[in-house]
Image (cartoon, rainbow over all chains, first blue to last red; front, side):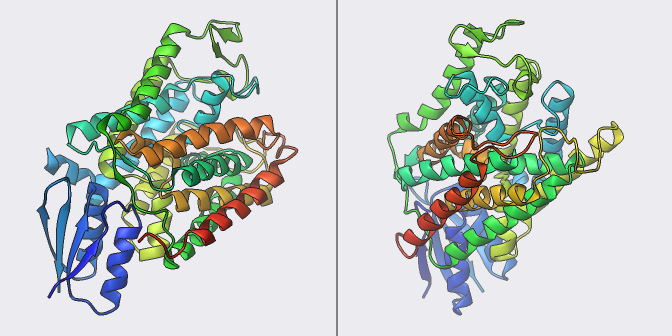
Length: 70
Length: 364
């Protein structure tokens, strides 16, 4: 089951830090919610750089769901 | 249009933006802006504070159109690409104080991180100490982030609130046009204009505004951030933003070099002093303030243009802090630090450390 990380309302670097901390703890399957484009790009880039396959899906109210899987 | 936006956020995109920003900055210097100060967000907000009469240091008073352009350019980009979103409520008063402290620290060094780049690109060795201070300050900031530092989540605000800072900037443009500089006069209507010193050195209005608009547009698309460039390397080993920083330095250096404007050394550099310790300490304080606030002063302008009220509050803090720095004798000059410059750097550092410790392990 995917681990959900809600970063809505947070700005850099916290969304990336939350994801990387969870990934370092051994997680391999994440659903990350972001609500701004800078965070979407930063988290996607960090996930890709760490060997995750990344998919994004636009949700309502400007929220994007990033799926990061190893 | 999203695909174009993605280009600017790509590795190539951030490098292209960095190269362009370096060129724009040097072009503005050639067009009349002060030496190694094609774009300096803190210096220019200080000049705006002077232009509005918030401080009366006669040599640094001018309503810099670059700042208005940077906010309005980012606004235009955000509107074009559907990224304008009014948001706020993440510790606004703390961000205001961080803005005040950042301005005070940066004015001890005499420049924000953008000017660190431009001073290095012009051969000013004193900026090496500023850059070292910036890295240390941001490094301390990353330690707080590792301990769970957060100023809390922002929430969606009424759309109109996102327009307040862009409208303030439009108002400043209108004020400038209503009361333009008049040769030989210190005042035009309600505005103050320097007759000598850095405030009197400026590119023509349309070039300044146009340059600012272009910088704002490009930086909004690419998320260019001079603080994030250092922070991401220290915190995540991510070099994306650092490539933009390096590209801006490279293009500004190359242009200066080929135009004969590169003068390596420490003495007699434009609008700079040689007190290395305070060049370093001023930027430790400013770097930490930028790190805790989540963006360099340029990035704060761009986010304010996207509708981010928290960034807008930081920008107001910068303007007030710059005014206070001059009123309280904290700002440096070419002769050295101000009478109370040490208090600004060290007191500001203590304030940042208190903010850092008091905001760990909450919110996120």
